[in-house]
Image (cartoon, rainbow, N blue to C red; front, side, top):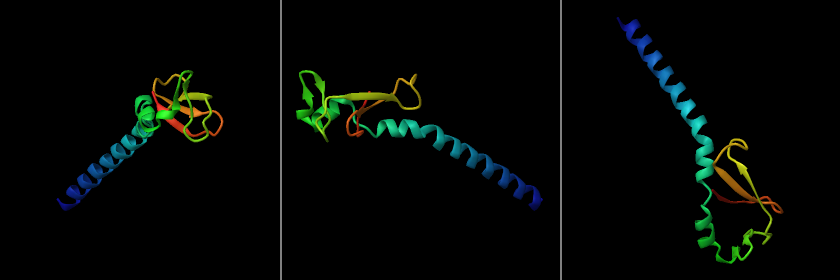
Length: 92
């Protein structure tokens, strides 16, 4: 009886551990994307970065911004980086 209970506990713990690890791995890109401010939040934090031509980098003041998908180029979640100093600026 005790042996059966121990096996059930081990199976339940293993399943819980696998689900937990899977969740952490799958939610990492979302957490990374959410760690960046939105464009509106970026402009509120750095009002001088909003220009007539668009947005510029707060760190080096470059106007050359590139964007990447969080997981790949087809991902709709985008992170915008400065092309000159490579700082992550905002998300969209």
